[in-house]
Length: 304
Figure 1 (cartoon, rainbow, N blue to C red):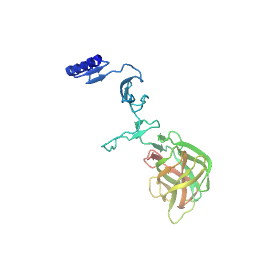
Figure 2 (figure 1 turned 180 degrees about the horizontal axis):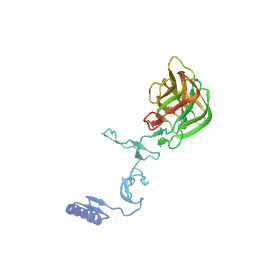
Figure 3 (figure 1 turned 90 degrees about the horizontal axis):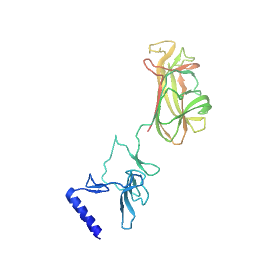
Figure 4 (figure 1 turned 120 degrees about the horizontal axis):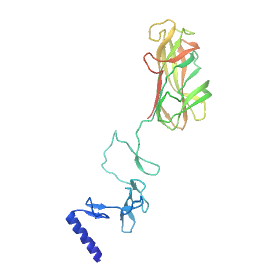
């Protein structure tokens, strides 16, 4: 009893004289300065118990705080068991990141970095014909130096043979989407064909389809999801001037698709397909480099 009286008196005197109290320190730097008596992660600097001597609150030497976790050691900066109530919190917007909870229950900041795939073609792609609506030519996007970024984790592969809408196609270059989600595909390239068309129509143009097709993991049976149609301007040379024997102008071929993948490792492939108008039955058509451009087309995919 005398010890308690002495201790209380001592605290009162110290608080009154210096305005600061130290535990395990002779030089307190705050109104209450507690120094841990050990240097391990399991050492407690502060512990608060209820009337049943159950631990309610603790601060460990490594800075981790535990609330209502019993005798367990806190495994994160703040380790709380059961619910936490928040009131009157502001609604945050960019540049703040949303809070996420990992599999172990730890609340952490969720990275907001954009996941994307960027392919910039550095060489011509071509030697195909445009004359038959049942013939599909694959547009390749292989792994290599043309891949400028791939934080989406897309995979690369080639099917030696397969089908597109029931039609046989060889050497299908495809991309693999590793996880379900919504992805925005944006492709741009330009087409041209050499010489006079094999067959001329009254349209004076070549109608060209660009197809976005998908197949399941392990399958080489592709089905069309989206078709974009563009028209090659007739009788133009590479600079756009009228030319009787050429479709050599850089004619835009575009594709923009917001696609929802619902399974893992789904395969995506793009194709060129003849849609109508003038035709070339010989291997006279290419995806070329527009005048003044530093590339032969690109594909950008963004995970939304």
